[in-house]
Length: 503
Image (cartoon, rainbow, N blue to C red):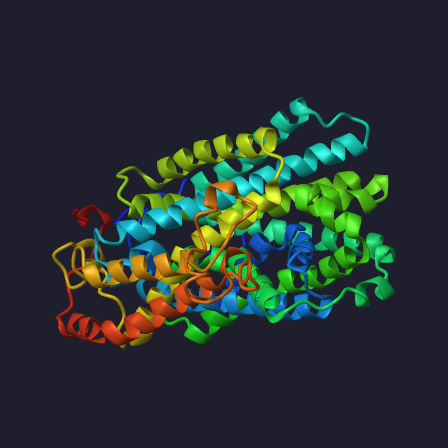
């Protein structure tokens, strides 16, 4: 077993030990190092989702052509249900004390799991790029409004600063992240409340209530978008923090605190974001181009610097969790380096992608929606398979066999891989991304299935995400029961270490 990382005594508050780089990678966390209670999961999930980007989701939801009340219901359901999925998968971390994409080996086999791990890695790196880019653009907008210049020089400095904070957190690992998220939670929470108080007079209920209602298809599209933008963007990392909890932690507590921590801030921000966006069409359109910076246009000048602080910290809070989990996913995909080196690799890619978004593209929202829906389909398929696999298990994971290609979980079982590919293929046929030209090939099943084709009423309902999730779940329940039963009948294996991974 690798050396214990330094850190807090309860997983949620600073401890007495000196911080050091976490040396754990994919290995199982030993009983002596498990700490905290389920409620400590509140801090990382709240800190990662309390950013002012949540306000911008109000404009994103209304962009589907629905009313305030429809957007409120769609957003609330999407947020809570998607983080509930995270809570269920987080239980697996408590049961095996291994990262999410190691637990996935039980369903996909040791080497077969490299496919979903690679998809998970792309998703988390993509989110890092989105968050760092938003923080950079918001900083430049604030400097421009203050008359300090918001050109390329400021963007470069902001990009380097935000990237440095993100990479340092990802490299240092679990204990620094838990401490950092506690600070981010308090600071961003307080400043966000101040922001809401300052711009509340920009809400005009008569205008909000006059927004016309949309169709059922548009409602579903907004619901799925909110799911992919929130919890479904985190399911592949949901067990990375619960794995440090003691084995006797309650599953209900893990599910409840993960769901509550992830949902509470986005729900509150969504309500206010909807009120602001529905009150001003100009603000709503501006958010599509610069989701964070546009929110400064209704602020008094004296609060611009505090707003920049809350915006940057909120983005860093999410990006730090992403870079930590992306490093683990990269290891699970087959890269044989220490975890902190994988985090550095992801940091370099994150900076390169952010440079492209900040300096070379002017259609952020279109690319963002395309990214979420395209990767949301295979991630939803994986999530369905994982949820069903967890539901079928009556015993905890055999930790040693999670690291042995010759163990009970197998090497490359074809059934889950083929199910993932089939669910993804069908799902991509039921989503469209017209705003992103490189994704125009999607939606090829909308015509043959009588759903109106790529320009019909169902074109932007994003049905493919839900279909992939359901197919993965039901397919595994129907086809995987015997495989799980055979796995659990085998005798327990010796204790695992990361060094015994084969393949």
